Image (cartoon, rainbow, N blue to C red; front, side):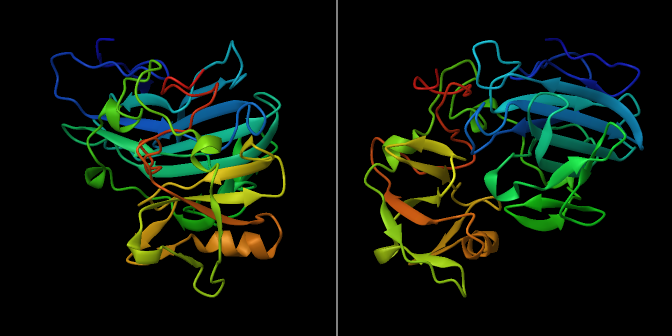
Length: 304
């Protein structure tokens, strides 16, 4: 799709396909929305709202996620640019619901940023299990934060600043979102049940919220859930965590640092435990750029 200026903030392309081109220098922010949940069982609607300078500029809901006639596949990408030159602050809300556009809010992710200058950048805004319960309807047709204070958003189950410096964001590359593919069913995806088929329960150090990686082994890490949330198979339901991510885990030698919310939710009974599995030729390490496989997925031969 040819990029063109408009009188207000606008989507540069439909979800799942970003257009480029035109004569003017690129100054665009591409929002990517992945999830670690199963669709439509856990979420069935994606809602995106954008405010520029405090004024509503874009609002759309994509329903029936995971169905044959889904409004979009995930990860979903949508690009925004501004007729004002990007000087006005931008507030982006990404919401995951169950029960359609007016259904219950499960997850809210927010970002306050500005359109970058002379770049197309990638802003990931995942709808992940650890932030379940982070949003709610405000009673006036909008969505509000149910967990964090003003200027904050839920990241890996904890409250963090919603401010995002767009100059520090990475350049947008479609292959960094869709497992090396283009978002049209190519590229790779991460098969959660298969890759954790022989997973071992990990002993969690609740005080530090860490698990061991003996010998510094490269591992995949997942949360085992007592409910039917997450991606289920072989009699259990799992949420795979992204390696090297603020929304997932980070390895440091023979220790793997989990988000503190994992241990908090284990203590509260929402998470049953943590399992690990070795990285193999068939199962690469799960990262933010490697989406999960499923009927909702825009990536991988096992997607649909």
